[in-house]
Length: 310
Image (cartoon, rainbow, N blue to C red; front, side, top):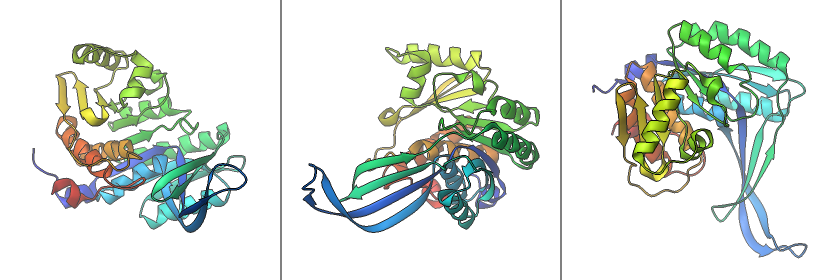
């Protein structure tokens, strides 16, 4: 396989569609236990904001050196406007639909002594009017991109995913999906879906050995009319199942510091490579390497072109 040049990456265009989220971190010192309840008191010394969920997938595409557009629904609230500003700062072409009745999803993590002590989630689901507007914008944007990536976080932003997959495939685009939930019929016709071990077990049940996994994965792939199914297996690496059989990549041996967002990095790398003209079979080991790099970093981190191809 020839490594795609930086120029090929710079020309590759990925449209990311999915649930937008703002990740907030409150860092502080823990020096005492509260007299009110047996919980640590965190004296907050630093606040940090990062792009989360599907928006973080788009950010991963950008840090690799490819072009990313992001389409999602947010609330007309402070976190929604903050998220839009962060997206624009990173160079992501941003197409946000605002739903006045929606709370932009925020995950607030309280960190003390480099350890997550508490996470608070703020969220609800978008209405159908905002989602219909998203469909119209998708029809306009998809033809301008080389690959379309759907990042499903189960927050309701992909209610019309079946229609969008069909339209993208009809337009000759590669479609990659990071799935959620137990009903995968909504992803039928995609090029590849990338469930992790637990997510796949939710759909096909558990398996005793590699042969049973192979049978279940290929059966699901054929039922959903997918070109491929990529199963990420944590410390056991990942396996790609396609019409030619299966291809396995072992986990990259390194210290695991934080697995947050590793799945985002894997599918973003896969999408950027496919958009640059690399086959799924050639892209998979590199996506595996990217996942191995990012678990050695704190929080929802990303990987650069230099790290991936060093």
